[in-house]
Image (cartoon, rainbow, N blue to C red):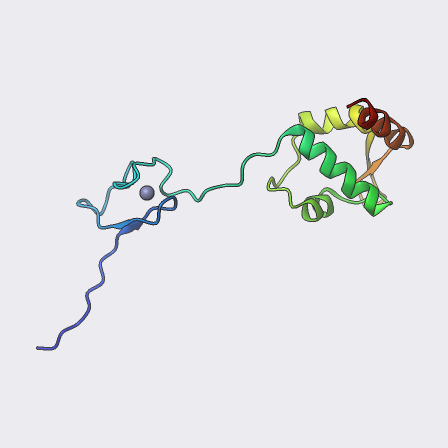
Length: 128
Ligand SMILES: [Zn+2]
């Protein structure tokens, strides 16, 4: 009889890297047996973005673009984690940085800064 490695299915904690073989292979563990994290099966996400960071990044990207661009372009350029923009934040940016969103002739939503945007932002920046 030869010696062979035998593979068993187990789990790996996304938080601490601990690997283990469960007693009941059918049940999903509730916590990692080592670090006790209930989020053992979810990778650590980046800390959530605050509105101020989101607004400033969006503004920076739009200024650099100097032409209307899509949310996907903004998201890629700024490295935003969220797939879709948060509606409440979009409304706030319409007020704060004079964000303008318009559909182009192809029906694609384009983002840009309105004329007032840069002035207003400069006032905000000096006030802080
Ligand atoms: Zn763990």
